[in-house]
Length: 267
Image (cartoon, rainbow, N blue to C red; front, side):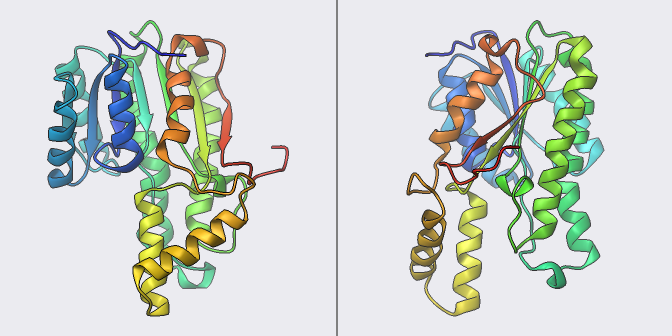
């Protein structure tokens, strides 16, 4: 099914690389006008130049989404550039510190919560007045499978993603009277900036090359995935396009796992 998003205006956080950048491409190719948001201006400008080769209906606004005032300004600027707002994709999410429970201090927990939860709070609050004016408003939050099935590493990250899943369900009920549909995507291991940083961490800790670490980590991941490969952005994007489309008019408060079959429990 080909989705048409002509006259749809989309705001994507973390849009300068990885899944966010690929999402911007997909929405543009489907006819949307898109504003990407990112913290690092150099990466944002590079992404904007790349996206302009596809369409002129693309804008970029710099912002640290953990900073409430920067988010408010970014949303206001995006609306001024696009004219309105229909879809918000909360794609920002990571952690600056990898570690086990006893490796993490209070700052690690707070920084990760700010990046993965409060960033969404700030963005949705700022976007809400404009989404209410849309005929088909959508919010899609990108969580992680660790929010449903935590492992033995990075508990601050998995706990924050669990909070994001819960927040998504809360917002779906809160915004239902305004017909703003809110859903959550829960990806398993896929090729991303976070996965690359994990491989680099392993290489550093084990004093091996990045290629050697990649072979080890990729195989460990693949061994736990029934479809026998880690994911790619293209495996996740079609579902996000569906949820942002008019075809998903009766879907809200849902949590969609996209993980190659890794998670087998009923949630």
